[in-house]
Image 1 (cartoon, rainbow, N blue to C red):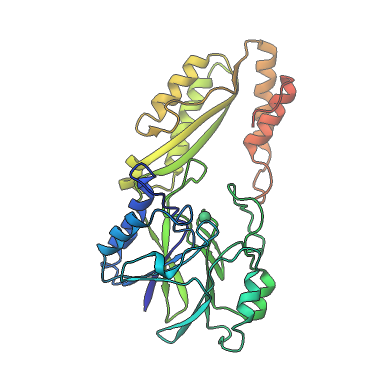
Image 2 (image 1 turned 90 degrees about the horizontal axis):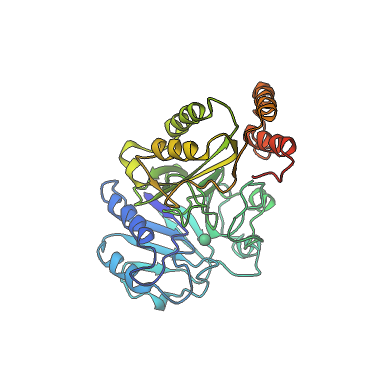
Amino acid sequence: MRIAVTADVHLVAGDDGHPERLAALRNILEQLPTLEIDRLIIAGDLFDRDLQGYGEFETLCNAFPDISIEIIPGNHDPSLAPDHLLTANITVYSEPQLVDRDGRQLLFVPYAGGTKMGEVIDRFRGELSAGRWILVGHGNYGGGLSTPHPHEPGVYMPLSRRDIDHFEPALVLLGHIHVPTTQPPVHYPGSPCGLDISETGPRRFLILDTDSGSVTSQPIQSEVVFLAERFVILPAEDEAERLRTEIARRIATWPIAPEMRDRVRVRIDAVGYCENREKIRDVLQQGFAEFQCHDGAPRLNHLQVDQNPQLIALAGRVRDEIDRVDWNWSDDEPEREDALLAALAILYRTESAS
Ligand SMILES: [Mn+2]
């Protein structure tokens, strides 16, 4: 049996409440019949707030009566209960529950504030088949994921590496982190549509195969894909030409399928120093003309003008030096552009614009 998994849809009530989120969920449901899947798990934060937004969701579910939808509450909708949703094909687990799917145990652990996931799992320890069972929950995995939740600092219903070693799930499927994240055996499907410009990149849902106990990713055709590009500009005669080349290079590396390019909404930042701000703005607008610009125009608040020939020459030499360094470091290290910005701040005796 194959089961689709998503989380963190963050539906908002009303017609003006982020229709792209509901549309992304609809896209998942629309894909399922073709994939011969008739079951969808939503691992928490289906709703952005407690006790609202049910109507639009019910209407959507009614349009897919052959798909069974299983939901756990998340930290945004912790009160969600079975009697809140009236559609026949929905199951809400407001209490932890162990269910069997084709000989595979799935433990649904609804979000509960002030609780650790291990405490809940422990109540089922006698029933769990080690190395075989699958956890569905909502919270933080403490095993060293380097992506903290930008909107929600703090720790929510944590699952530790020790819990995994101790209880030996075959797979862990979690909601809470909105960026699609994979750190086996833990998988966050991520939000089906980025919630705002801070949640960039294309989106996916997961397909769980209960036979093999493995997951695969399936792309979501969301209405919006947020992206952000920041350019560090150095004053130079060829500053516009350099920028033009860099824009083309960046766009070429976007992980965006051709049919999704018209859904891109990109935030464009230029920081640093230039000889001609107007020209930089024009090059940015031309370079991204094919795409929707998130803020209406490139943001140049941190781009300053420099016409001091000595500083310009010095800045060019600093860039050449920085270019020569091998920046292929680990995740938490600064990137080449961060180093360049910090160096420029020293040269120009200003606050770093990063
Ligand atoms: Mn969430």
